[in-house]
Image 1 (cartoon, rainbow, N blue to C red):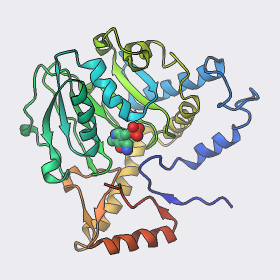
Image 2: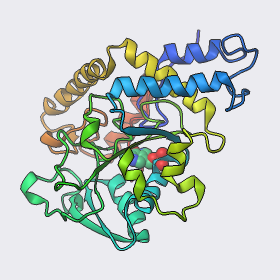
Image 3: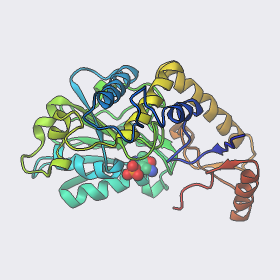
Image 4: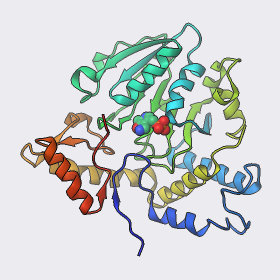
Length: 331
Ligand code: PMP
């Protein structure tokens, strides 16, 4: 019997068993070609089928309009923290950032190295427990873009509605940790980025969805692997892409379609999150949720206990019950 644990790691994270089984079944011979997906050329018709189907399924699941490009890139979401300002913030321009936790804070640090960066909300003073209220944001109508992180993985703070940028300012979002977990209105965004390894597949591929007109902002002198325009025009095939990771993402997308798409996934996530928050809220203060109730994430549910000894005991007893990955982030 194969052992499978209850894996709560934020990412790399659990993958659906049917997806792993299909990958296993196709490991030595992908659809009769006599090779594994790890062994075929990225210029082969087999791989062309894999990447084109993955993109088509992603477009269908998320309802991505035709005037958006989809890219399968490398370097993780962290590289996007730098590529984004390099491509979309012209020299001398400023970009607005909403900081609701560790990951948007990390993104700001990269953006600051590269140019003018305006933090319009910083939740640090409240220990990253809350979201900004609408009236709280003083947004720059000339900003190159307005950035936010849809779900802060470590702090468990998740936006319910997108912040509203001033007219003409593109909204940019890191959805790494709640990618494909619920329906999304792509047309409200200028750019969406997500590392795959939390919800969409293994590590190694990062999905970037960008409105085509924004590609005109890419400066002419960027190194090729940092150049959105070139990467988008090459169909993510300027150089060798992370073929196997893209294949796995493709399998997860098919699995999601079978579940009823993102609306179906959202129902499952909401039910699971409700169970956890109910346990926290009905514990008489024994479990303390980190995020303010109105900001609570359906993906990451950080909570504390009366003391660290009890937390260590909790993690130990959970492990004995094959529940792993619940210790939380080292920070
Ligand atoms: N953004 C968010 C919201 C994340 O949770 C993470 C990873 N934990 C990152 C960005 C960084 O992703 P990567 O490791 O792919 O660079």
